[in-house]
Length: 282
Image 1 (cartoon, one colour):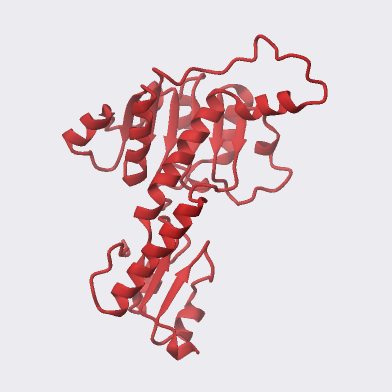
Image 2 (cartoon, rainbow, N blue to C red):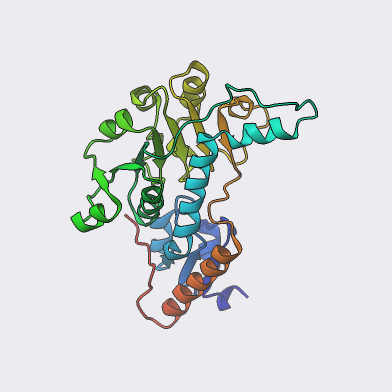
């Protein structure tokens, strides 16, 4: 069937796209990815075979933004810890000093103000949060005003001011371990780090140390490196961490929309039309 294959729809990084596969499919025209992140693909290698690539940014932005806000709220109000207390066989009452932190009026720093980051800002505005953002390019003034967001040209300024820091960037060589020991030490000791991008964007060993020593208050992670973490990993033993298994886009509606967007991209490529969500190698 190899000569008949003209398109590949990647679901959760399967199949693996390597040189051997590309050489075996001489008539391949397009690879459509089920999500935004393309860090699992060698874009230059694929392009060298004359194959076009597309992702699905429109389909995943709302569900991923929802996940980010869910993690923020769950960490702030200690919902996971509270659940274990409430369901414990020894539960008689909840300690009076089992306290979370306020979200209303707190400052949220968004690192990465693309499509998903902006939707997070829209949600945070509804929670009456003060919003800072750092991005490679500044948003238009009317877009900033719509969500009440202030631009931080330097990421350090955002880290020093935010009560919650949410990382929403693509994984690239430039963003690998973007948040490390130095960045964590710039954050408030009362701050929470939330990651819904890729695990390797954060230096996990530095994060473990920061959480153990009180450099920051807490972390909420939908992504780790690797996924899943080894069962003896230190992050899994800390009470001030929430970890979820990359749930960002996992809703019935988002899954359906991703498939629709992928099919739209594939059909465009096969008919030599502009691909709506084409991704070019940098």
